[in-house]
Each structure stands twice: as structure tokens, then as C-alpha cells.
Length: 385
Image (cartoon, rainbow, N blue to C red; front, side, top):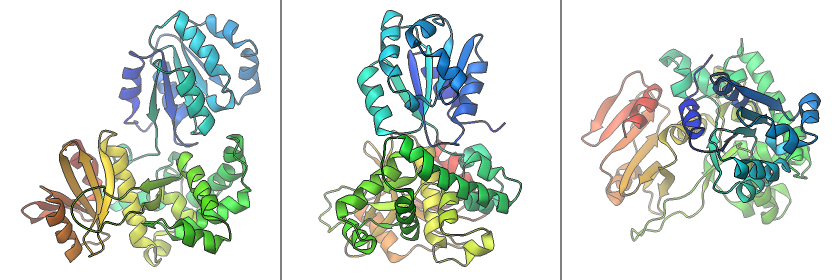
């Protein structure tokens, strides 16, 4: 069983809050993690709201749940029954004991709205993403396979690249045909798949709604709506530009990345490392994969952005926490050499330190305040910040 980095945080939240919500994409491992947390307690109850037999028990939810006041009740796929939030609020207000409910669900506007309105002050949220490097702990030799397959457990643990690729194709189809409609979103699956594939080809580029809308044959607000759907369901990350008053002409559009590299490769028909090595997206794919590792590992107290000016100064990722600012440059090279724009960004932003993340076997200093860091050591680096 792969240890999930989020487990201690969930267990701690259950000692402070009556209800804890674990959100994330389907198949990221939410159910497995919840059962591990529940089984560690002396008494717990697990209900899957997609299972008719469990759903039948909740025909009168207040009556049923009031009989399990002293247990941790795990409600899986909670977005299927949003009306339960009002019942949970009533039960929690009667007895505010911490650790009463662990709710699992995929992101949906309805779920977030219902939970925030009904359980304000009674609930805390956690996001479970697919595996990161701290959880899989790949060797240098395994790292590129992890990048190829992505972090979804059943993709990473598949017995072959062919099986992994087939699983990811099935995941994409199910997400479009079943999951998104279940959130009440009415966009034809074929339309959204074509849009998703277009984004895969634009992975790591600046978002230009008007240009994409023109190529897609719809309005700019429509493609913005499609983008919001994929972002809300954890398929896409929007990296904003740095907001700073530096007397420079800064790029103002966000950059768009598909969050899981394995799904990116499936959408582009990339089945093997040989396919990936010869594909035009290889550099952008590596950049997005490293960005996602940083986003997962650095913690929510850090704000991430990128820096780019009209004059060519550029830094792939800027991490800010209060007055602290750190730069990350991402290179798919065994001997990375940052361009002139990197050094200009260092000077513009007055960065105390920057790191170049690359698929190297061991790290080394490039300058007094710039280090090349192996991607497999990202977790160790970010933990020390």
C-alpha cells in the first residue's frame, strides 16, 4: 500500500472538526485513503452513495445517521446526494463532537456551494491529487516512466505501458461521458473531448480565449466555460502571471497546463517513452509535470505564478509566501543552461535563490544563488523551504 502524504492532515482535522471533506478527481485514491483512516479507529461506518444498498439505508438519513453518533461515518460520492448537507448540519449542531463525518467527493460547483452554505464553520476541506514523487519515490531510472504514465494509481501501477495507456483512455472517456454530466454540466462529450485535446496541444502556453474560440468555431465565453469545467474537475491547472509593480511590461494572460502528465500523453496518443522523446510537446510536458509536483508538495500557503516580460525576462515558476520569493526554472536536459531571460528575471525580481529542476542524477551549484536540482529530490527541497 502506497503511503499517502495527506493522511496525517486528515487524521488531525478529524480531531478538530465535526466534518472533513476529501475532494479530488475520481480514481485518485480517496476511497482507499478514507478506509485506511476509518479502519484505524475503533468504530466507523462506510457508505458508498453509488451503491443502491447503502443508499437505501439513507432513505431517512436523519434517523439512520442519528443512530451512529459515536462513530466516524464515511460518506463516499457525497456529490450524488447534496441534500444530505442540510441533514448533516442539523446533526452536527445537536452534537459538535469532532470527527463525526468524513465526506468524499469529486469537485463540482453544487458540492462546493452546498457544503460551504450548509456547513460553514463546521467543515474543513482537503484535496487529494494523484501520486507525487514523495509517495512513489521513483529512482532516477523510474522517473521518466512516472512522468510518462502520470500519477493516477491504476495508471502508475499498471503491469505494462500498454495497460496503463488503455486505462487512461478509459478514464478520459468515463470522465467526459459519466462524471461531468453527473455534476449537472450539459456539454456534449465529443465537444469537450475535442476541446481537451486542443488544450493538450497548447499545454504550457498562454491562454488566448479569442484565438482558441476562432479555431474551435464558438464564442470566447464558451471556450472560457469549457476551460472552467476542466479546471473545476481537477483536469487542468491555470498558472497566473506574477502581479508586481516593477516598472516592466508584464505578460497578463495565465498559462494553461493539463494537471496529469499521463492524461496529457493519452490525449496526444503518446504510448511510450520513445513516442514522447520525439514529440514536439516533450519539453512542455516535462515543465507541466514538474509544475504539478511543486504545486502538490509546496503547500497551500505558497502562491505560485510565472514571470514574463515583453523584453524577454522569464521564470517558469515563482513561489511566494509573505515577503519570501523563490524562483524555479524547469529544463528537460541532462546539462541545463538557463537562457539570458532567466538571469534577467533573477535581477528584476531580486531573488535570493532560484532552482533549476532537471532530470539529472545529482545536483550541483550553477551560481552562488542558483542550484541545479534533480527532479527526484523535489520533495526534499520543498520540505526544507
